[in-house]
Image 1 (tube, rainbow, N blue to C red):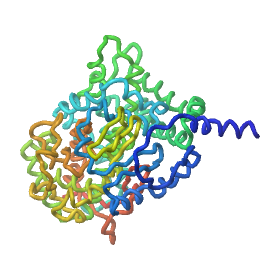
Image 2: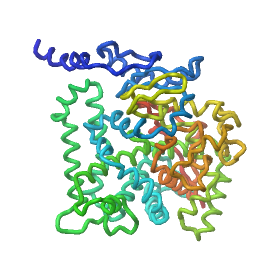
Image 3: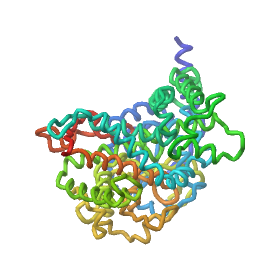
Image 4: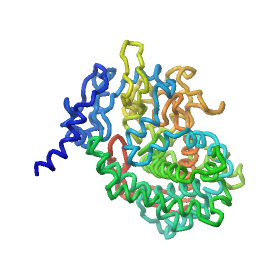
Length: 518
């Protein structure tokens, strides 16, 4: 018994002897891990229960402009006041690194997410080839998504509306979109691909949740024998077999539309393709595209933001006629076919989804970075190397400093359609100019206005946001073109949200009533 007790306490004791990084002079909000970290687990539990209210209450207090430490589920982070954003937004990745932060915040060395540190291949392909391929991809995605939508709502008619769980519907559309983007239509239909594809995210989550309560040294001991780790290794083996079959051409090579697997192989710097590395990167992409934000800065956005956009349509039905008229007009100009140009023409929908995202942000802590070298700030504060930092992106979306007209506490679906209603900050100073086309403005769904940190900011903006924006608009447009959608009788607003770590999830049980338009 004593031996077991010592073995359990030893990692904590060793961790206590390891020199701690220097600290910024700042308050502590929430649970305190304590001098030797013995109270880390209670602090994590407190954050799980009250983290969102802790962040919002602090922001709405007189201490809004003061930094503070906050123990979250996986990391003890320094939450910086928004006043520092201007001087940090364009910091070089050698000083502030989002990939290192993502790995730290997902136990990447155990979950496999650390493959993103190997190079910038995935990042560059998202920003480059994936974005340029939208012209070819959108018509294919639209046809496949329309077919799935018709199948899911096959019993829905003009005279016979049906009730369906909104989150489940959007999640299935998002899963299909992700699979088509990764491997194309032919392989998407194969169960030997679809089964491991759908199991990657739960497997990675199982690894993270199993190891999250443990100190780092104990994670190293437990991880190799963890059932979740074996499950993830087995998935890698299955995916390699289906993506790179022996003695025959992979189905993704002959896809009717561009695929990410093609991008990976074409961009390989050597003739010999590292199949293990590509499989590992595919697992990261699956995780990103399925959640669009749970792990990296892209993907919990797709399912969450699209589901919330449907809820916002039901809460604000007066917008539907204008949005549908805009959609019909855009489709007429492209001969009734969904194209990239169709989606670009949906400026009112851009604004509506963007406002819905502001109203119900997918995360309340954003701008997640790891400090790589000491950074002196203008007021004398020094951010020490190794420190994980964040900003309170959730409450910033309701701050009059960033959204002063109309009232930030009022939902205005045309907030970003009306340029006069955009944030009052100097646009030439605040608009992100790095790696964006000259036609992009902060008022587009993929744009970044001063109070919006959900896409990232500065040099480290989300490289897949053009893709994500197009897919969100496509899913909403497909529903809007074919169906009338509303809350069940007697309901006027969405069911309550839930939080997991720093992420805000729409209700997964909320049902909506769909009626096919005549």
